Amino acid sequence: MATARLDLLPLRTDHADELAVALADPALHAFTGGAPLPPEVLRARCARLAAGSPDPSVVWGNWVLRLREDGRLVGTVQATVTPARDTAEVAWVVGTPWQGRGLAVEAARALTGWLSGLPVGRLIAHIHPEHHASAAVAAACGFVPTPERENGEIRWQRAA
Image (cartoon, rainbow, N blue to C red; front, top):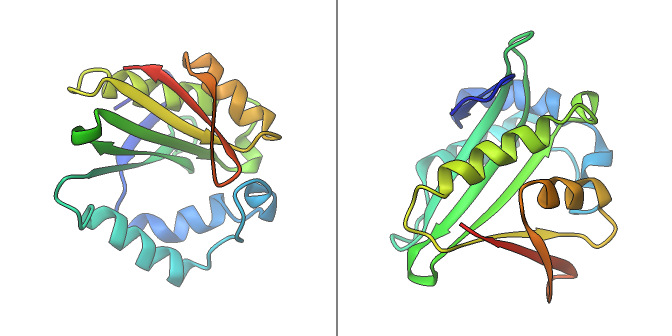
């Protein structure tokens, strides 16, 4: 997938070192918990994600965001597609140095547009109630908040 400024490339294990740098700011975890992963841990996680879901009824899609302007990785988008539930759950993250430039909206729109071509009826995102930037990305992609909560996060959804 590609946008005006980004190439969305399938996640590979060899992206881990560069991703570790792009996602190193602890502030990125303010709403999701955890901490930045060191390269060796992120490498194992990238390998696990790139291998795909161990559940044959679920498909994982994971992409890194490469900014064409300078060739650097700046974030990720992901989708967990569950055809039996007619859903795809999506998420996005852009490293702190690149935030505020519309890159998350650009990447999320590319992802949701791609998902709209699949036989999935509903797209879902889970967003912390105080994460206003992520809520703005969801709204820009046509998601609306629902009254449903999961692990303290608001469930946003839209038709695919």
